[in-house]
Structures are given as C-alpha cells and as structure tokens.
Length: 180
Image 1 (cartoon, rainbow, N blue to C red):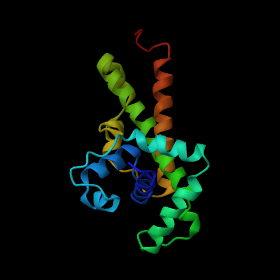
Image 2: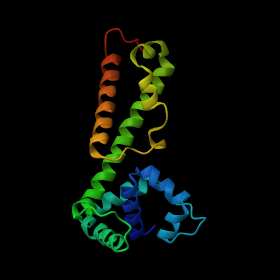
Image 3: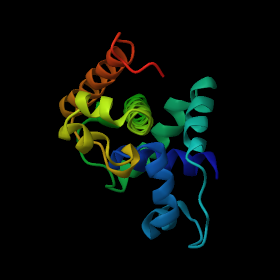
C-alpha cells in the first residue's frame, strides 16, 4: 500500500477513533474505505502492524507534518473532517491520538490475557480478587470495541486499567498468593 494511502488510513483511523488493528479490519471490510483508497473490492488489505511501521518511518524521516498535512488539507477541502480548528487536525495531533488508542489497546489486552491465564491457573484465588465489573471490562478482547471519545473518558479508562493492573500485580506478589 502506498504511503499516501497509509496516510489516508491514518486520518480515517483518527476520525473514527480506531486502533491499528481496527483500522486494518475496516480496510478489509468496508466498501467505502476501499473506494476512498482506490482498492479493488477483493483487496485483502494489510496487517495492522503496517500502520505502526508507517508512523515510525514517517517520524524517523521527519515527514509526518508534510505527508499528513497534505492529506488532512485535502480531506478538509472536501468536507470530510469536522470543523474544530487547526489544532484538531494537524498531523501531530492525529499521530498522538492514534498512538494513545494503540497503547490503551495493548495495555488492556495484556491485562485481559493475564486475567485469562490466572483464571485457568488459580480460578478460586482470582475470584476472591475480582468482581463482576472486571468481567465487563476484560471479558471481551479489547480490540472488539471502540474506545470512548473524549480525553476525559479515555483518561478515566486508562487509569482504571492501571489500577486493575496494580491490583493484580500486588496480589500476585503478596505472601498469600498461590505458589505457582
């Protein structure tokens, strides 16, 4: 996929609040995204890691401002981005927002995987530690839902995952934890 197409995917990803994995899934599944990207309907898309690699290369060569600003300017001209001022559509903001979503996904999915392992290894011990709210937060894969819009709500979600992670770590290293 061309750098221009990946830049456009990054803008769409930002506009819809998607992680890399979710954006790659949209490229494979949505006709409107395929049309916008100039892809054939049977195009298989790409692995989600391509987006992260693309951002690293952009930043490494100092091109993030240039490439994404061109795409953002064109999208704004076409009325594809909501009004909200330059600070909301500059490339730094787009890259930072996407990076934040990906970190939230990775951390949340890591905690979910740890909970699954603990549920298999020591279910009785784990059930004393967690409550029903945990199952709502970590029962489904983190990439199976969209993160909420708004920095405050995302911050609260990140802090909750952090608190839950520390709860698990403290319990695992506590003297009364199973010897495994």
